[in-house]
Image 1 (cartoon, rainbow, N blue to C red):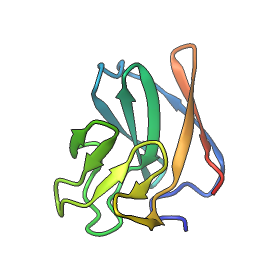
Image 2 (cartoon, rainbow, N blue to C red; image 1 turned 60 degrees about the vertical axis):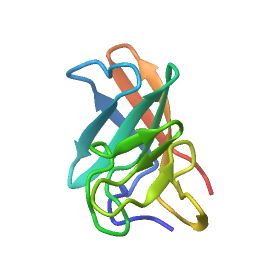
Image 3 (cartoon, rainbow, N blue to C red; image 1 turned 120 degrees about the horizontal axis):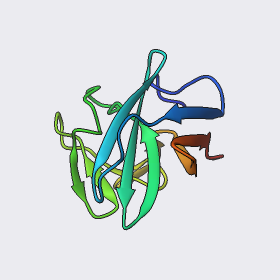
Length: 111
């Protein structure tokens, strides 16, 4: 399932204008789409940036280990897979993240 916030292509380049702080998140726009990028224990993870239930920004959500809880409705998402916690049949797109100099290359993970 592709959330409405998903880019139409599988690889996305993101220029960083600021570093991502340890254990923090960064919301980015790629055209009309939102993507949330998280740093967890030194590794970067990215998922669609809008909650599929209420549309709130997941970059502004509350991190709990490898999950982020939506600040609007409380639904929680697994950062590595995009799965809704407790409802794995519902999921957002998740992206592999590779640092390339001062930029990031995001590639949609296959389901």
